[in-house]
Structures are given as structure tokens and as C-alpha cells.
Amino acid sequence: MLYLVKSRAGKLSTNKEQTTSVPITSFTPQGRKSIQEVICRELPLVIKVNSQEAATILCSPSDIEDLVFGFLYSEGFIESVEDIIDIDIDSAATAVSVKIAKPFEPKACLKPLIASGGSKGRSSQKKGTEVVSGKLSVSTGQINILMSTFLSASTVYSATRGIHSAAIASPEKILIRRDDIGRHNALDKVFGSCLRNQIQTQNHLVIISGRISSEMLLKVAAHRSPILLTKAVPTDLGITLAHDLGITLVRCSHNLNITAYCHDWRITD
Image (cartoon, helix red, strand yellow):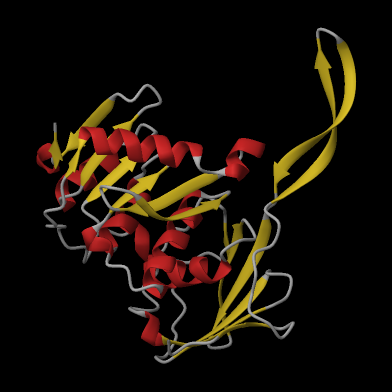
């Protein structure tokens, strides 16, 4: 690797706790009870590139390196890991400074504060996005197994019911899985990990727990993944873009019913 990930505490960056507990009052047929409830943590992450502030992302405090790589790629600031020279993450995982090889020009379309739901930057623009032509195929049985494994794998979701998940997988198994309070962040973390580990996304499918809107679909298209699985109903524009960009868009519900919205030729019975 040509880049160095470090923290200001002098050691490699580590994940922070994704959950915390808060006192609540529970009202049940048996009466009032004071208990502790486990909830997801949300922290602002300030990203600076070549000493210029690029964005502030509200996110879960985990897999920060993956999130930064995926975000910078999605917004067009880098094209590969070779573009990053150095990453410096503070010990609280709330600020990261990135040095890239090419000049950095902040985009006017990026907002100073990007909510956990995602940005409206380059990744939300169809212009310049190429049609995905990958021939990867998956069977209905493999889809059901992958989705069942995916939905049961997150301990944070089981504890809080407040997290989104994304994964990259082969037809046989899930390779990388990431969680975040924001579905866009979870997807960027997965793609960032693929970049860092040199996993060719055009040869794998993507799984997402949340709704497939247009910007989510475009993130997948930018990484050339030909098949996208979700447990949620996509938006109409998400379906239109999937059709236009050659991506097989599939919803697999909890009862294992499979719905293909377009390009079902990649699915075998």
C-alpha cells in the first residue's frame, strides 16, 4: 500500500463503540419501569483533504478508513488507493485529514454538513455513468441464502434496530459487511473496503438493507456491480436508473419472496 493510516494517539486507528445505553421509562400493562436501552451512537466526522475541509458526515464511529475511501471515490476525489498518500485519524474518530496526490478542488455541490442519509454530490448525478455490462448470474436459492445470512448477521442491529447494513458478496457467500446509521455511509464503507483490499466489485453483487433511491443506485453503478439485492422497496427513479444503467435490481423480503425490477436475465431458477 502507498498510504499510511494512523491516529493522533500514535497507533493504527480502531473502531469506537457503535452503541451506548440511555435511561428510559417503559410503560407496559404491568406498569411503569425504569430501564436502560441500547441505542446507536452518531458522531460528526470532519473530512479534510489536502488541508481543505471537504465535508462533515454524520456516521457511526466504526470502519472510518473504509468510509473515507468510499466517500472520496464516490465524490470523484480519488480514482484508486494510489491517489491517497496519507490518512490521519484523530483518537476520537471525529476528524480525519487526508493527503492525496492530485490537486483537491472542493465541489460546490457538496454541503458543509452531510446528514447520515447521504450527500447530493457527484454520486447523485447520472452524467458520465456508464452502463454496467457484467455477466454475473445468481440463482434464486443463492439469493435467499445470501439475504437470510445478511439479515441475521448484524449484532448491532439485533441490539438496537437502528442501524443500516451493506455488503459485497459472491453468489456463494458474503465477503465484506459494514454497518452505519446511514445507508449511504454503510455502502461507502463497503466500497472503501473493496478499494483498500483490491476486490473487483464488477465481479460481485451488492446487498443493502435500506431503500434503493437514485443516489444509492448511482453509487453501485459507479463501482460497476451488476446485481443489487435489497430487502426494501426501491423508488421509481431508482428502478428507472437500474434499468437504464444495466443493473439487475432485486428485492428479497423476509418471507423469501423475490422480486426482480429489471434485467432479470442474471437470475436463474
